Image (cartoon, rainbow, N blue to C red; front, side):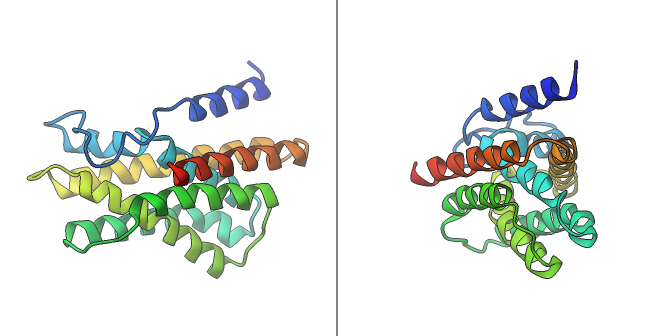
Length: 195
């Protein structure tokens, strides 16, 4: 299988993932396995998948510090958001924040924007706070905080690195393809925000 076929398959899988089933109102998949619940939660909705993969994809073309730091910024935002939820703090507009993170990540890709590390890192962490908050609110009562967190951190890193690998594969492709992919991600984010 050549690289372009793999790329198209990966994009197709991301675009056909179930929509936003990772949010309140959905039961956990494995009631007695906190690690597995944390691991699967980020993969249960197109919103989480696209935001994390798009940030990884976008980060590949950034300066070295931003490229290397992006996974850490993603995880830091996730942990801050989850901690807010576990602390009982209310965060307004979580669903719209998640949708906007997808939209804006798509715009960053489509415009091929290059940002200073401080600006890009802060933006990425802010994007991920809403995702982390959603993960935090979905943790079942009595679950192991460490196991659940380890699960969603590993999944988050895997998705982000998969996006970065896709970005690396696209480095030699026509920039119009990259811009088009960013546009598709932005449109999906817009649809999620409107829904």
